[in-house]
Length: 249
Image 1 (cartoon, rainbow, N blue to C red):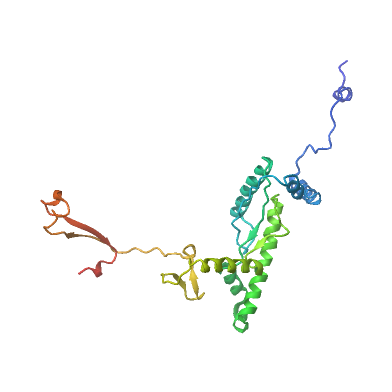
Image 2 (cartoon, rainbow, N blue to C red; image 1 turned 30 degrees about the horizontal axis):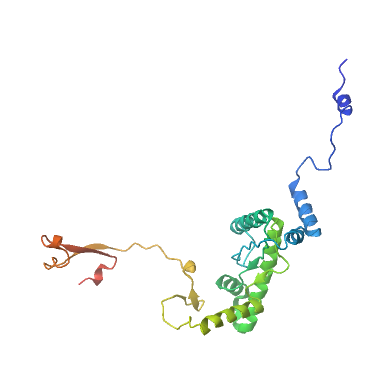
């Protein structure tokens, strides 16, 4: 008589584990992240690496004007891999996250939210609304990055709208002035009439337009041997191309 499978199993000394046989990641990941936060894994890593050579990744901050998306997620995940891998190599690898809180994206969104109400508000009141908008999405993005398991100093990020940060910028600029590295000059800039401010090149969009163009040969004359003896014989011209043929004489 062949014993049943359950009877054979009971005769074996099988290892026992509390580790779940199923991933159940939607449920398990939040539990794991909560546990890591409770035991302060990041703080313990920093403490264990105290006194080791520093490896600092200077993080270009995301913009505080929306929830995280695929681009910001990939950016943070790759940086997290770099920081954690150097920590595993024995470096003291802190990570200080930050947010860019200035510029048109936030101001335009706040303008849209305020609508006609903006006309009766002072500049200070509008700036306060911009600050509230940035704070809202800083908190939202921070939770998103933490949900991805990114380690960092999330309780003390650097924000470009912090007064202390702005003061440091002014001090650094003052050092440039003291060293004679700052001058006043002129340069062409892209200007937005509705926003009443200069635009970065990345903010300028060009409308596709088909223009007439011509190639024109300009004769160079006969005294070319002074430039190069090889040009002594033959008729030579310079070819130009223009999309404004009406400007040609």
